[in-house]
Image (cartoon, rainbow over all chains, first blue to last red; front, side, top):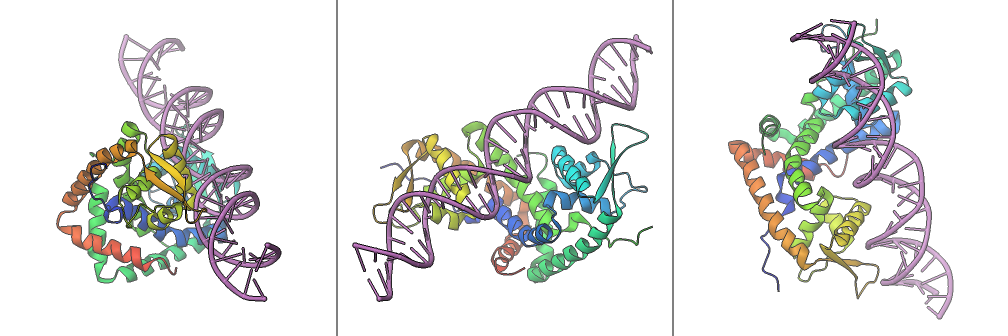
Length: 153
Length: 153
DNA sequence: CTGTCCTCGTTGCAGTTGCAATGAGGGCGC
DNA sequence: GCGCCCTCATTGCAACTGCAACGAGGACAG
């Protein structure tokens, strides 16, 4: 006869709910990427950043991606290696700072993204449709979690 | 000169946002669980379900947990094995159906949960405080994603 | 220069994962 | 009772992960 434990409902626990929602929303798209193009989520994230010429010139190093894409550098590095092996991107030493590795889409990679990006846009539109009138408030809450959380507990 | 790719902002892509938010919200708690108690997230999920006597009697099999906790059965199985090795739970063959493995907290496991659950409750309260007035709408949106998504794309 | 300290990217390692295959057991028609 | 097919849980395997350590290169003081 142990004393009763506090009640706790995992399905009302926000971190858990977020994890499940993240998994569900990623799954359908990720499966398509995997089955039809052989691309994993880390690879997809790298590709997205190479697809947008964020800065004036295509300076995209591993650390740029690491910073923008919430992935550890080793994960970025290995994703980039796989993408290079598959012929979607090329690596080149930066002329100015030879520690940097510049990543750039190849023609093949460009063509791939021309297929992938519309799929992602359609999917996002579908999610937004499902959220319906909740959309704005939902995204606002997500924003709060995303900006408030970094620092502390 | 390749034709321009469609614009796409990863930071506005809901599956990505959810993944980052899930990671961030889990991280702080997960670190405590790991450092102070040696417990991982899959293990924590199993423990939570053992801590609540959901059904009349403590019938908690691997498949029960698998269903309620959104984890693959192999993941549940391995988490359970680790917990058993650590002395937090016990496994026993079900008398009625010997394919089932009944999992139950040991005294040590019970004591562990008496420490962990309050931490989780405090953390949840903190998250809710940060969401402030967005809370209700945010959770409503999350609900939509969680129940709408299973079936289709 | 040169020494020291920092940054960038890769890699070794041990642990974890998903998936498919396996073995043990149950249910039911015949 | 005997097949046949289904369910439960575990495990083998190859791939992926985080983390720490590493080597190469840059910056800057003296």
